[in-house]
Image (cartoon, rainbow, N blue to C red; front, top):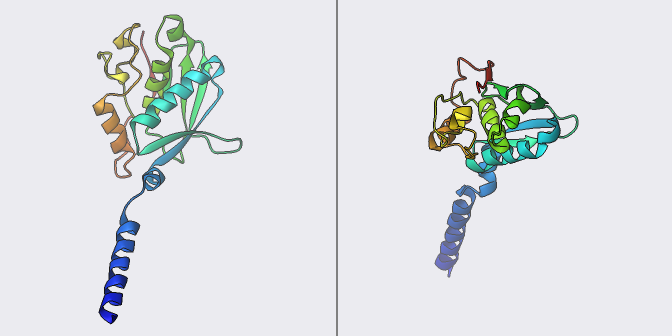
Length: 183
């Protein structure tokens, strides 16, 4: 009898240990770097910015973009203007701030609005332009062509952002530069 009770206790303890050591889906999200964005100056492009944020949040796991609440520190400021889209090159960190200028000029020329948002947010996350580049590369930007509707990063672009937010990567030497698209 004592032997069975002891075995049951050991089995229960082993099960408890294995349950405690298994990572949950929520635990993976807690390990992600959270960056906040402010779209209050994005004017008519707020829905496009939200779609671009969703692209990154569904394609990478080491960083999460979350809309800032009033009074919360903002990491990525999004401003609509009449120029060409451009952004400060990241990777932005939780204690840093970058700006995305969502330029109307590209929209007027017919470029995909969600692709513009995803591409410029990619700069904030540390990705430089890839020019010239195919439509399959989000960071090819305008060289993908006006008809390009690909809003998603390719495998290399996703991997680079995952690496940049893995907590061990060094900051890019070009971080902080404003990258302007050339039509």
